Length: 512
Figure 1 (cartoon, rainbow, N blue to C red):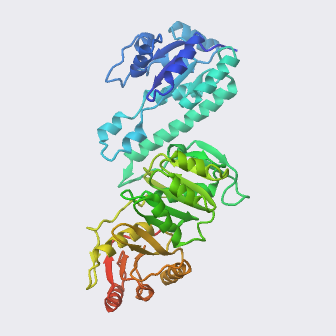
Figure 2 (figure 1 turned 30 degrees about the vertical axis):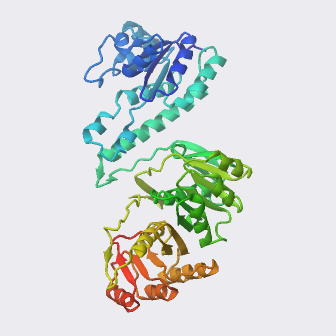
Figure 3 (figure 1 turned 45 degrees about the vertical axis):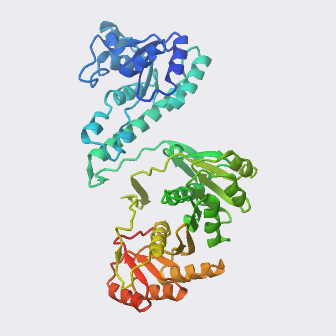
């Protein structure tokens, strides 16, 4: 088994790099490096051969040309033991490069910035990095290639166990990871450069498997999680997440994030809200959310948008929940909740959503922009004789943010004062909008909550006056809806007859 003699290292993300390379030098590996990577290693006292010294050719054009050289790619690609290749390498003084460590310019992170310019995006397209990775991966019979810092420990462990080399199985696994990474990278570039409006002309998906799941929606379905889920959520406690847990917790986190200005609790079941509350503290918000429906939260998902403290933890602990999501968990809360060994505690690391929502269909995929549109007080249009009061406006805008996350047809009754907002009744997923209204009214009655003085939000327009009439009969005094029905005039007339205030948003929130 040959020993790794020479490594070429060029990384954008330098986490864990110095420790990794220092151990490589302990195996007698010669280190070749470029630009900022070389500087970082030298500052750490690690001997480094600059790439220009290795190739005899200077870096130039702002670093655009530095590793695109026969002494680099020849050293990676030539087949060890092949007489013709060995002779060519000797004739042109090409030394073997046995290990490549490269992670790429952060193109995806760069173009995710709302103010990114085309020039900035172009300059973050890595050329030399993918070229070296592909050359090394193609020749993985002899070359070890690392594209992910998470693989540093495994490479070092194998070198310790194998006299300074890695096994073919590991090299093959790492090579596979390289091609998946470069495919995804190229796909991101193609999506950015080839987009028409905001959607790419070609949709390329290449996501690494994050973990195997026990099963899918049902036990007879196999399932796995792919992508960067770990960049958004970190599990602190409890048993392994299931397929359904992951769907639910994503929906819950996105709903809680709609209310950055006030402590908010969202309780979901099967990706539908069953209670949402906003108040001065999370405990008060929990009381409001839980009061909406005290049956549905059993086995549900709870998301909060503030650090979870002991007060709300003690309240939540009184019922059975599957998952709790929070930006932080205070120690007092952990002390209470970790007594439930199966309860999954999830720390939300980011609230930034991917740009596209993708679903499979027979023969292809559907892609759309995520529904991140918000409506402010300035966006709504009053269409009835009576203007909503300030309290009603407060409740209407709260209800509008909740109804956006309820499966269509969606109806949400809410209440508010100057300090709190709360859901009172939620009707989801019915074939008729008036049926959703009836369910919302029934749920409020079951919870012992009065709808007198409430407001109602509808995710899409009321096609007939019956939905608005049902809301008024239940006690609602104001309505928020998109408008746009052929019978808007009839719906507005029905609202005026009952002294309802009604506002149009001009935007709907279907959720299929």
